[in-house]
Image 1 (cartoon, rainbow, N blue to C red):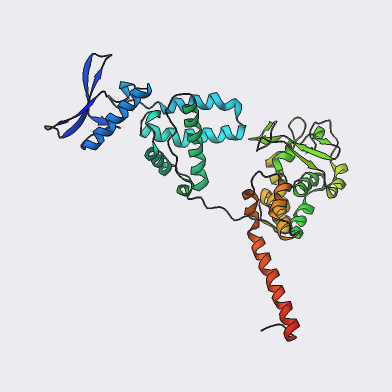
Image 2 (cartoon, rainbow, N blue to C red):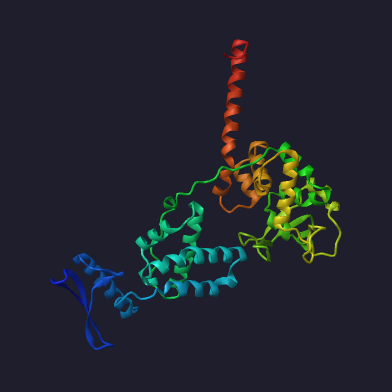
Length: 370
């Protein structure tokens, strides 16, 4: 194989000797990743990397002859431009924030090449991200998507192994929800003209963004075809999961059908006070209405938790539904996604078991056990 390692006694450093055909001379490379090589094993590692690049046909001498500017930053920027047409607006916003606020600052401080990013580099990036748990994971997911794209494009030989899930130290939040009676108090405190969209979300176990994007033509023979949503305030012709879902209109919602304002609008739910063409609800306008109603009845719960999360938890804890049934109702692709709603169900089972013991003791002893 090409290249060899050597040692300079006067400087007590190791180097890689490499013949450069373009310059027509033998080069001595003393640094690996910007640092002088004081150990033989580091020089061997550098030589191995250079030989590997040569074998794979991606060798560039300027990558090793000095502290060259990183090629990662321009690649990240160009990658986001190239793939933006295939992404939802919210994903573009998240990727852009990850690149500008976290990845670019790291690679400016540590200017390495795209092909040099390995597992140890990824751990350094992970530790540099000033976010917690899921926030760190989102930044690393962005970088992983970029490197996967680079691998598919032939820019790198392989995608290095990324940190394992446990290394993000993600703590799953406790699901916040309210029982049916408290939820209905909030809904009844909402002005009549706004109630239909909130009841639709509750009764159909759907996301508020899907309700905002629902069109009149999406209701066919008492079946709602959910195929749109708002992503970063932009209407998109696909759901969050990218899958259209058919949901039959429940009987309890039909009483609200005639209460929706009549406007020349393609949207099923129309906000009479909206300024946008078609007068659709926005998530921010729904949240303002929800928060005001919560304040009136003395509740403190966010809209998503008070609607979808609460409906799911009520299904398990109040109606006695199963996880598999809830999965069918919500349309989740994985059963694990609905199991997070089951924490309170464990307490409910405990109550049922204790009640059974009490009934047996009464039959046997004639009274409640002390």
